[in-house]
Image (tube, rainbow, N blue to C red):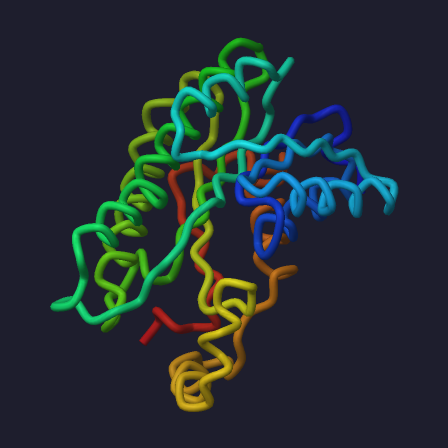
Length: 247
């Protein structure tokens, strides 16, 4: 349970949902978790919750869409062993109705900021001699298409490509880069969708295992990919989708 003792793990979008779940999972395994999010109050409360359970967590408010702020965040760290590149969002709507503001917002948050954050983390990792691991939060929608999610799918397909290219280029630096690609997980972001009975029924019909996923299941996959047990895995995307993309 202490495989991350002495390691510094940075988690973006860490104040709630998948990010908080990942932060808790790493802290439970001995890591010092640097939790990153825009909302200072909510972020500090989340970090305090981890510390109250005996974990090590630091709240570092930062807007990941601000490259200067991201660079300053990583420059201030003594080391970075793992990045969980999780911050992102979605605004489902029909393709014909997508305004440029929505397109630009999701490209900025889901692609540009993830690239910038990964670049800053990798630069911090190469300052040391131990390499590191980067896990991008992708989606099953980075492997398929879906109505009302054209922009989201586009951004997640971009992250899948980024994962492979980074993995090849950073391998000589002993930095492994992978992605996790969850199906629908009940989080604060997706909860409103599942309150629609028709949407929930249709979603469950599309998942062969017949249920949506849990935050803990995704966090476990992220921890595995960042751990020594995955030492020969890089450039991969681990689907946590209940069989959604297998059909």
